[in-house]
Length: 286
Image 1 (tube, rainbow, N blue to C red):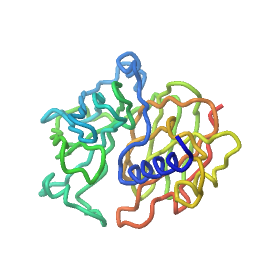
Image 2 (image 1 turned 120 degrees about the horizontal axis):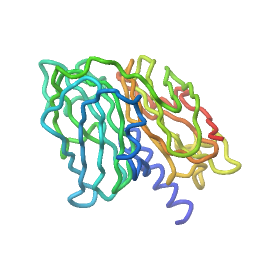
Image 3 (image 1 turned 120 degrees about the vertical axis):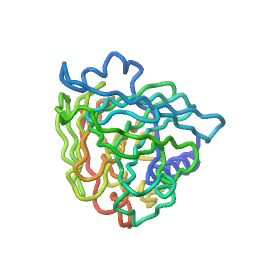
Image 4 (image 1 turned 45 degrees about the horizontal axis):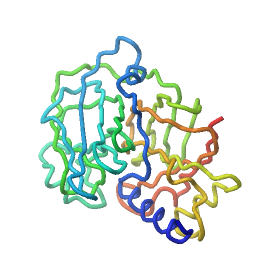
C-alpha cells in the first residue's frame, strides 16, 4: 500500500473512532479460560452475552437478551463479523425511549449516557469485561449514530449489590484531560479502566513506530502530518467509553514498546476531540 493511500485509510478510520467505532483487532481467543481472572475468586456475577454479525460487508447486527439482572455483570462479546468491532452500551433514562436516543445529537441530553460494554474485538474473537450495571433501558451499538442493527436491552433490579472489587493487573484512569497509568506489561492482562473526569472518555493505545514521537502521532491524527502514519494502525487497542465515575475491568493484550495514549471522544456539549484538548500521553510497555 502506498503512503498516500495508507494515510487516507488510517485517517478515515480515525474519523470513525471519533464517532465511537473501532480501528483494529484485539480481544482474546481464550476468553473462556481467562475471564475468571478479571475479578477475585468467588465474586458473584450475573452474565450478559452480546454478539454481532455482518450479514453483508459494512452492515452489522447486534444481538443481546431482552433482559439481564443488574448488579455486578460479566459482559461477553462475540464478534462473528468480518471486521473489528466493539459493543458500546448506552443507558436511556426514565421517560425516554431508544428511538429518542438514536435521534439525539450534541449537546447530549442528560438522560442519555455512555455505559461501558466491551472494547475493540477482532473477527471471530470474544472480548470480556466486568462492570456494574444499574437497572434501566439500554441499547448496544458500535457507533453512537447507528440506527440499524442495534440491540435494545433491559437491565432489571435484583442483581448483586456488590461493587466492583478489582483484581486487575494494571490500571488506566482518565481525567479531564489526561491519563494516569500503572502496571502495564506486555501480553494479555486484566486492566481496570476508570473515568474520574466530568466528561466521557476512553483509552486508545496506538503503538509508536521506531523513531516516531508523540507529537507526530498527535499531529497525524489531527490531519496535520503528511506521509506514512507514525503509529502501527494494525496493532491499536481501545476501551469503550465511560461516563464520569464509570469503572470496569477488561482485558488488553499489549506488546512491548512505546504507545500514544489518546482520547477521541468529544465533550457531551460538543466541541473538538479530546486529543485537541491535550488528552494525549506517551506510555511505555516494558
